[in-house]
Image 1 (cartoon, rainbow, N blue to C red):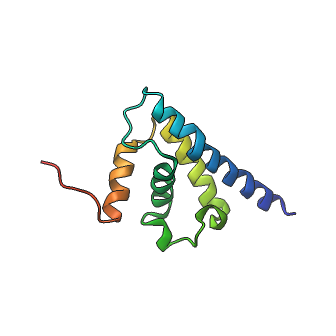
Image 2 (cartoon, rainbow, N blue to C red; image 1 turned 60 degrees about the vertical axis):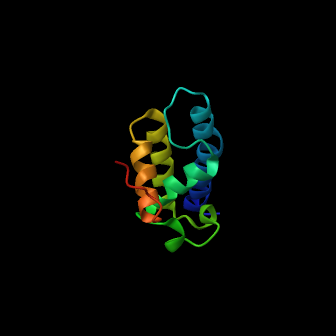
Image 3 (cartoon, rainbow, N blue to C red; image 1 turned 180 degrees about the vertical axis):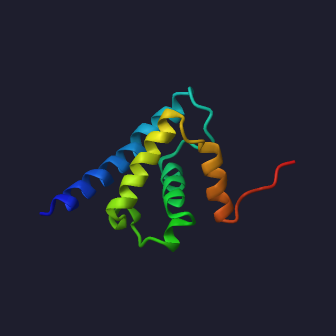
Length: 107
């Protein structure tokens, strides 16, 4: 098996671990003031962000099986940025909802 294929699989595994375990655990610990807590929400936000739009307009389903090496790397990097507080999850979530036509104007 090619090294890049193995590396891509490792990145996808890391992305899944981060979005299914790490980020939801951080959200539920109460230390974060995040707008989401569930794994599928983190996956939506991360995938929409790396695709710059609604992810399923850019990726076949299931997304994790269809990520390129570069996309998987960007997803893992973004998860780490969210976990460390270097990325604004509220803003990323809002942008994702805007792309999906679900954002409400708050006054």
